Length: 309
Ligand SMILES: C[S@@+](CC[C@H](N)C(=O)[O-])C[C@H]1O[C@@H](n2cnc3c(N)ncnc32)[C@H](O)[C@@H]1O
Image (cartoon, rainbow, N blue to C red; front, side, top):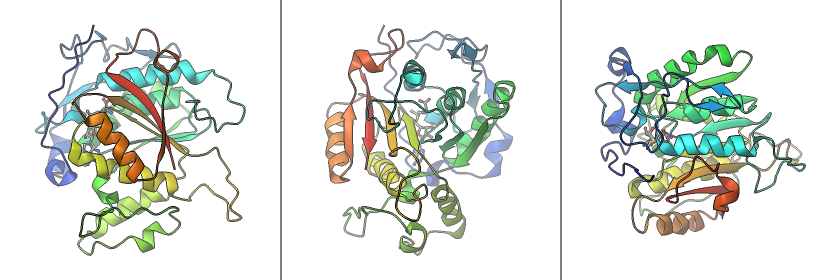
């Protein structure tokens, strides 16, 4: 059953390497994902074989000049996370803040490293009020294309594709020391400490910080050590960002959390993840395997972790 492809691209550590403007958008070519040898699930994603709440999701793959970049195809982590979220869909969570709940109903959901967009689309199917798929710029044409493919099932749903590079939120100083703010109230004005940061990136980053987020979701995005700190910086800032807290300090929504589908790809990667979560003063909970995962969509190399600030 286990047939995970561990050979991921090593050349996509930041948008600097994957960002090449409009040409990439022009050259996108969509191809069906079918009987993918690398996947443990032989699902015809383009034909709508994958269902959430009995509703087909249609997902195409892409071949463009970044064909080796990982966002051009759907990884098993996304499929598994969607089914885990679906399994938890109907679970009663009276407080709305339970660490154990993956419920997304009426919440604002932002996905990090969306790739082809499966989880962002599934989040809409699972009742998210707003769903934001984010990734590096090269992924946006395919992300938008897949949202469009599912438009008939997304009527009355708010779903957007946005550029977000974790390196925009990497808050290490010149000595490589982490700068961790316990509460990020004025991130936009305080954190412009990188004078070289260009105006466009700053505007895009501010746009993300203006979004009121309840739940961050991410599947299979922890696989390269150099990406771990930028990714966790992003999670930390977004979880601590105060956009959905009233001025009197009372929270208007459940405690923000990040639901991460982690795949153990390298020795010591999990301990690195835990070490870094602690360095960021983030709380985390690794869910019980049997309780969290859908019984037909799981693998022992995978864990679901809830992270909160
Ligand atoms: C293994 S893929 C997983 C994609 C998708 N979540 C899935 O499971 O199908 C990793 C994703 O992380 C994205 N990524 C890599 N570096 C990134 C960065 N610096 N900022 C944002 N996303 C990044 C890639 O573009 C890719 O979509």
